[in-house]
Image (cartoon, rainbow, N blue to C red; front, side, top):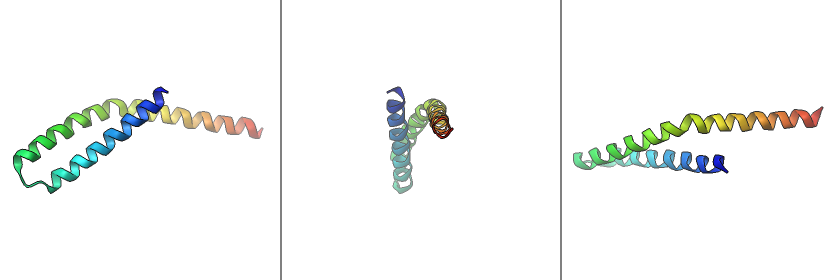
Amino acid sequence: MISNNLDDKYYELEEAISTLEMQIKKSKDKDVVSILENCKDKLQEEFDAIKDDTESIWENEKKELENEYWRSVI
């Protein structure tokens, strides 16, 4: 369950950062760009904080699936 919640948060943050990056490129108002960049930086910090944990969980799950496969083959 923790993995699913972390997965969801990972993808939501990734999508939000991407959306903000697109809006920053489109915006011509420097004040709006500044606000968007500030929001993006905060989300990026949050994303960076969970990225390693999330990817570590994915790697462990992948290894476990590989181990299950090899146990079933042998």
